[in-house]
Length: 188
Image 1 (cartoon, helix red, strand yellow):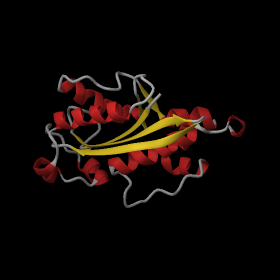
Image 2: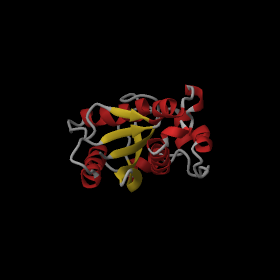
Image 3: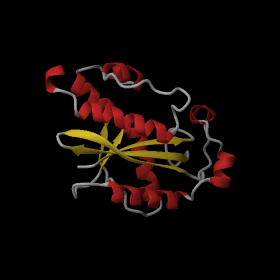
């Protein structure tokens, strides 16, 4: 089974009122009883919808004007994401979409695939690492932030200069997934 940790940065909370601005993805695969990090990809997209929330833009730091000039056409970005998933999937099973707060990231990805009439390589299901952490670590929702999980799972500290950059966040979320999937049952 192949897991794909996906992080999105958007110009606001919901599509199509707001834009999907960037996508980061990192593969995670089983290997000899453990899970290993695989390849990563990053895409920046041209905005196509009118909504831009100043708070969301401040968080992600992406400049809509630069993206209008330099970003990928969203349909091309989605095709490249699907090709990446096909190229890096293993096991012949449908790839698993994974997000840290999957409802946000999946909604943007799923909407954009539907908007352009493209097949979503993940289908309509996803895995939320926040929910997974609640079950594996037996913790409440309030303790599922990346900062708390970083300490609980003994992960390297996040680089504050790169947080909220979709490729960095996807790779860090892949570390969280890896640690949760490989968490010893005796430690839970």
